[in-house]
Image (cartoon, rainbow over all chains, first blue to last red; front, side, top):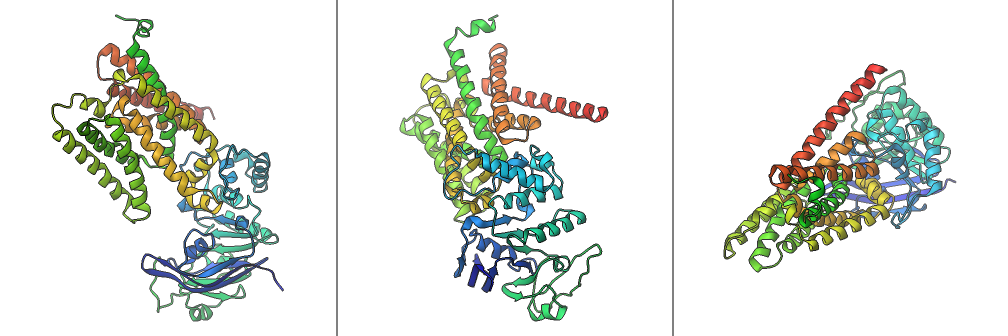
Length: 253
Length: 277
């Protein structure tokens, strides 16, 4: 019997007048590794923002069995201002949640040490005083991964961490996530179904509705049946399936 | 010709020096925040809309700066509110406040009896005419800004860097945003006397651009900005005195030259570093 971390029931989310998510149910258990796929504009990012409390659902509920500071989050990298004057170490430390309190005179030694140990673990401690904008894509993603781990989360949510990085770092990242999965549940949002299916345990396809597939193997026919039109870009020698578009749905690339 | 030492025996010069010191402090701090967050245009909107307050102040016979302060804070909150809640595109919202303020200012100044003698000083600044009371206000503001930025340094930095992420760590994003936009408004109004409405944006961005050549760390950028802002104001003030040109324009010109020189030397320096490697 697995332990439930999060229970989403009957969730509807609307942006302006348009319904983005409809009747979404999802249970997240300890040690889950969910690959979240779906077409652009299908609602993947909206769903994780709803989990994080960044968008207000129209109806339905999200029940947490873990404190809200036990969620780790790695946002899409293009949402971040890369020329902002901030050091790597400060970015990582910004991941530390301290409830509703303001950071009064906050310069916590334990946090600092922990941030440094995370950077060390990722092999980028030497970059600690560099400005975030001076890093390569892969280095930057490592920094944001460190930030998302500052609270020692029980659920780690990553929104397309493979963008902006080279192939080598991509597979390194997935290996790292596999290792982290021993300590925490992971939701990995990706547009690269072929590659992630190699690492994730289950697949959730989000396209207005959410279809949960309790295995990491998914065929073209199943995807079609799941109402999940996809366009896939993969590279390297990792086995992958190429799926054609589903014709009943309109979507954007 | 007066020596620099002689200048210090003039009250107006000493006052101007204090004013430029506190202007450098407040604009250095707030400007770093403005530049880092890329809200220079927002600040332009707030600045120009404060002209509406100056016009109303004239008309009612109040201190025009009081009117400007009220207008600036209202427009700051208005811009923030309109773009967040009323779903008006932010740049359009800024343009509305920007031009509305200028229009109201011109209407009321036109309707005021008599001639508005020092209107030019609000538009282009007159640091040599700054009063002791105004200096006290600037000092109080600078102290308050220092206090806020030291106390809430990490909160401000984290929210400015990545607002959405900051929400997930439980930081009071809305509160801090409204607080800072109000502080921007007050900083702008209290510094209008130094360089004027038209030129104040430069005091909030030029020292920061220069500082940014040397550091990419928020805290150090504040320090360097304050330094460059003061250097620019001081040299600008001296030039304006000796060459007899308007002080606001002279300060801005000095700041630009300072930026140019630093930019060139940083390029030359990094080229020579490359050669040595």
